[in-house]
Image (tube, rainbow, N blue to C red; front, side, top):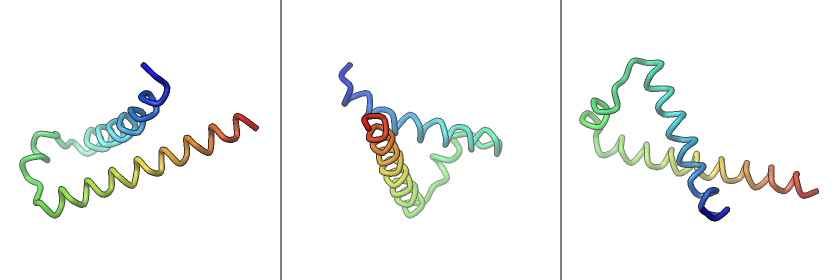
Length: 69
């Protein structure tokens, strides 16, 4: 697996772990959430995930830049 494909997968995994952890802490089953979301809520979640991915990627870039210095 190339380095760039590993980096692309990392934000997805981070988000997935965070969401799973939040669900478990609050006793929420993912199947129930999927069935009870409105379209507006789905869009809001997609935007939130996109924002989180961007933040994680920015963090990784800064970390990599500091390593090369």
